[in-house]
Amino acid sequence: MNETLLTVDGRPMLRIERRLAHPPEKVWRAVTEPAELSQWFPATVEMELEVGAKVSFDMGDGEGPSVDGTIVELDRPRVFAFTWVDDLLRWELRPHDDGCLLVFTHTFDDRFGAASFASGWRQCLDALDLVVAGQPVRHERPSAELHDSLVTAFGLDEGTVEATPDGWRLRFERQLTQPAESVWKLLVSDEADALAVGGAVPAGFTVADVRPGAVTAVERPTMLEYSWYVDGDDAPADTTGPSGAAGPVGVAEPSDVAGTVRWELTTGTGHGARLILSQTGSDGAAAARSRALAAWRSRIDRLAAQLRGMAD
Image (cartoon, rainbow, N blue to C red; front, side, top):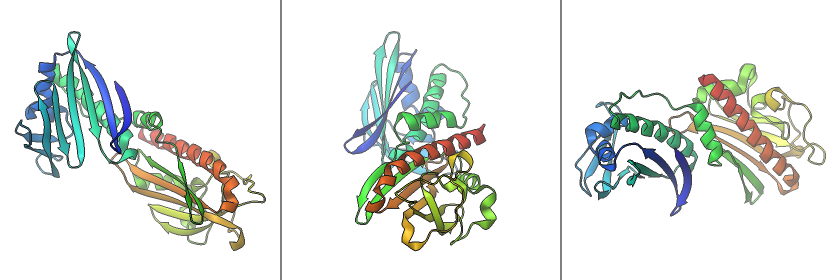
């Protein structure tokens, strides 16, 4: 299997190649006939096989929810493509030795969902191979280990920095493999009872290179925001907690506050919660920016590893 994340016409596109030991005509039936397609595709499908025809996807075995699409390309037995709401799915079958090469592309908008999509499609294409071979299919949850390896392969673990009228903002967005409640419990640990606006920040939400001030906003179990401040000439704090996190250090004086750190756990792809972590800073705290970018990337990687462990 070969997964690649591209950008085509401004949209993310996942491209997967797989060699199958079956001729194109045989694979074509599994890709285009609803009775076979529904065995390995992530929905039950109903359609008439012609360009412009409606495609109905039932995600609940006849009990909904359901969505629609349209067949947009059809070249028997070579190319088949249809929309799924706003996404575009396309299969191309190329003769190869005694079998064929399947080239599958999925064009979508949620770039940070790409690892979830890729791990899910790998599982679907494994099932496709079994269907064509006449073997039984077992549907299982995609591997958290595979998911996070694709996050790294696609560069989705990297943060961004942008200029703002007040200085700068760094931002990470990452699909996680556990729901928000589980992530929150892990981050708060045994400090849940003490968590309150104006109080100290639980160690799980911090890194040693960003000295926390006071909690400024909290919505359990989806959001925590706090102020941060510089220590001397942008020197990092030297008090650390578990997994490289800085321990609670009290409340910064207002004159020391350099910006805010905000953790948000939002709805993701269904694989788990979507983490959006941002930090703002003034131009006067620019020296801390690069350290923070590296520290947060490492912290989120450790968090992802802990969540993978919970799935075992």
